[in-house]
Image (cartoon, rainbow, N blue to C red; front, side):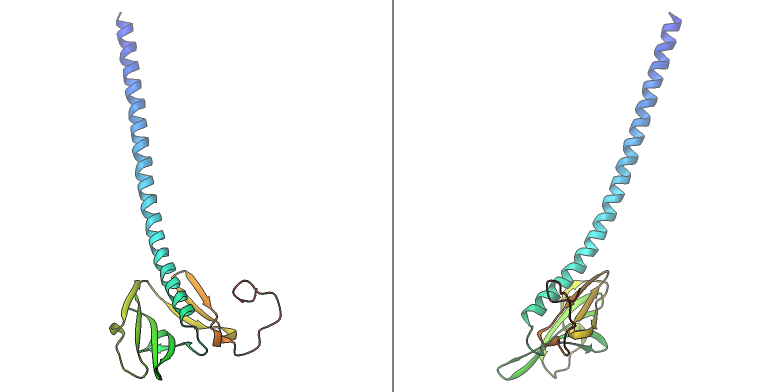
Length: 171
């Protein structure tokens, strides 16, 4: 009889021990999963901001791509992308630039003086860079993502022979 009670106690302790090990394992997996999910959403959010900024600029470039209408310059010492247009014989300029952690857009009559904070905040990003490449291509970089646009007026020299991918860029 004593042996039977002792076996039941050992069985009960063994079952409780296995249950505790299982509970701790489940908790560890849940904590690891929550941490991984948090990291993935942060990375995804950062990537989303970069993609949204570049998508906005791509759309702006497509809508304002006139002959000689897109160029790179500086606005108060900040790298800027210019979109020039003429409305009723008055020249206007839209500038896209990065200031204080945001992509800004400023539309004004050409020649007027403004400060960077006078523009409209578009989207929050860590950085935004513009670079003119060969053949008039313009490279725009935000974080780890890059966009290359090919303005109509960008062809300043003849393109090299060879295959081109969709969008006219050399392979």
